[in-house]
Length: 267
Image (cartoon, rainbow, N blue to C red; front, top):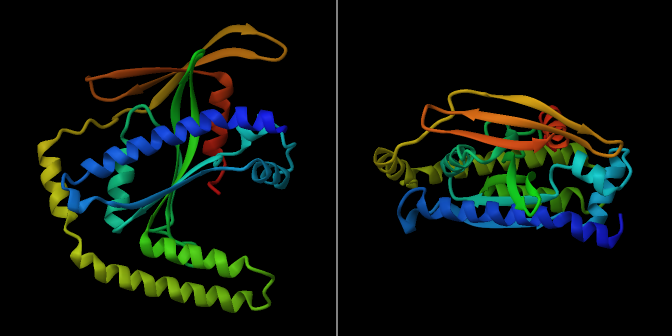
């Protein structure tokens, strides 16, 4: 992958990331309706560097090409959202997932089900529609939702564990798990100061939420076959109640990528 190929390749991922940041900013301002109760403390974001993309593809035993990066990597664009309370995380993720033009590709709740070493976070990968001159295409953005204490633990764990080779890994793992449990206890004590539950109830009473009641199915239209390009289109029809139907056309290549996303575990 040349530098020129890399910079051209990441541009739509940058666009997807920026659009997602705008949505998160809107949710932050409107979730509870009061400026003093905004759920997000801060947001961090990044686009994977060229070297990082190539190294990850090599670990997957894939050639470091643009095509393989698009097919096999889900975390080229990444956003980390740091919240005040655990409830903020669940409220934000539910509202984000309810947006009809986003596709939830993968999610893992490491808050309800922490990793063995004590790691806690809520991971979700969403497909964000990016509109170009030649049409629309979904690009994945990985989002990690954490509270401040979860982010503190994860940052310290990364700093300590990856600093150099250690001979006390098992002892360190046990200590980190103990520290994680301490932070859970501290976090639970701070929950008594969380006044957003009441504010969310008031806001819900003023708004009507449209939920997706159905599933989705695809109809394949075989238009043309070429040696290098498969011009087959899928139509995804998302059903809610009778208020709306949304039709989204994507290439069969994107359809295959979505299937891979659903079949591969979140890293």
